[in-house]
Length: 132
Length: 295
Image (cartoon, rainbow over all chains, first blue to last red):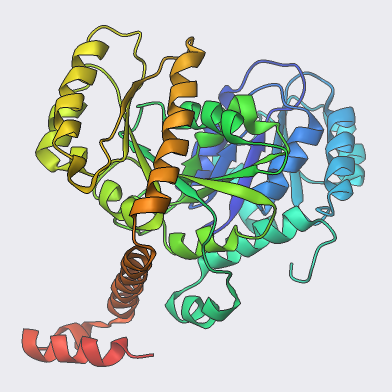
């Protein structure tokens, strides 16, 4: 399997200032063949959705360590829909307690990745989801 | 996903993806549907780390007007190992990234050997007619990019930085004869003025066609340098309108595009070749490849 030809946006919404995890995932996705765009820190869901549209990505991965994952996922889903881009797949990774997973999936997250997962498992899940 | 979106920006960005991914046959098939290139195009090139993306952010901000949105096409290198890429220019364009009047699109170089990307000519054409007044093309600053960018844009800006050895290397490679405007970026670093003086000497010899390339010093904290660059680009466009032959430029673009398509078609044929095919004598193999090149 390979992510060749897939475009993926890795985004850091909200206020937490740690992007080591986001960068590691970005590099792993590149090594799996994807074209990866990274937004940089502290972006608004509105901004992330607009970049996703302009860059015509297949998927957006939100990296969230701040605890505001529910609000940020919901808001990003809303902003994507507003731009007629609700078909872009959404993933979320970070410190996300398991009791929140169902709610996030219900909001539209197609994959939830936590620190317990290996990088390979994250990449494999994204590959499977994108049908790569 | 196919079909028209109610969001025009999404239609544009999807069209760009289709064009970037098109193989040679698809590229040829879609030519009739593309607008021809009329928008002014500025090419920004220079070595990695010269500050191209940050400079483009400043420049795009200066050049946009109410009736002149600016489109930026930024090309980043693909990994030769995985074919994947990190398209990182956008982060450095922070200052404009949130401006709806500026459209930024990142494109991986894929297999292109010339610092551009496959189908760059078509990507530029596809950006016509979306309310943009100008297109800025940023290239991977390696290899032959400085030569090929020349055929695709109207004004070539070469970015150099002090003490990188760039100027000498660029002179050796003949790159210093290719640009319409030179920028010594990070001009607050020591050695900038000396470098600018060296380049000016070279540029003075370059005025055979009547345009003497200006040498402009820019640094992050000095808005005057960017204003001077903005003005130099406008001056060059005006000079070009009076002095450059449109047909010659059109022919150079046609030639570049044809050459690129043929070279990619050769790659396609060779990738599809099996062991038996490659086991032929060189002369027979050559003829067999040429036969397979046809559509």
